[in-house]
Image (cartoon, rainbow, N blue to C red; front, side, top):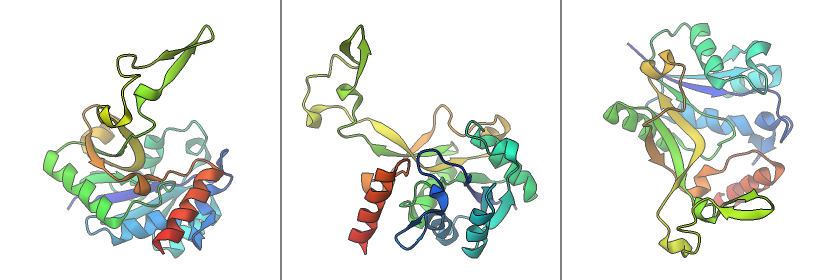
Length: 224
């Protein structure tokens, strides 16, 4: 029977936050949060970490995930994540999954309930799913490009509107992607016509900088 496979891509290298996937935050390695959420999700049949880092592999096995050793050509800064996903599926012997649920370890606040809800959306809508959060102060009506030393609004027709009057827009938060065999065959993770699964801003923390780690520590402290 086709399986729902959660794949967590966790390279050892990171320029913004060195070793971020194994950094201790809230008392455990960052990647452990994603593994725990995936293992607790009722919709997930297998949890797989693909990594080129032996320390991450050891952490992942200790947390109960399967581990695929990612070869160096698939672990560079510019390596497409779809290559790592397809390699992981081949390595675990899954040629026709019901769905792949891609969980980036830099999004530790997504829950098992979020994963199950996203998979349910995928099943109901028969379309790829992407998690999003609503943009507030980062609304494109507040954004500009610089041309000849002057600011030019990206949305001049809305540049003077109050925040509460702006039409809602959504940011892809990177926490959950659910794709099926059709998308995998086309080598697609981010594609046209994705179904949104909305998450609150607090659950959409994405670790790209040291400041993000500090924010995560504060969120975890408040929740505890």
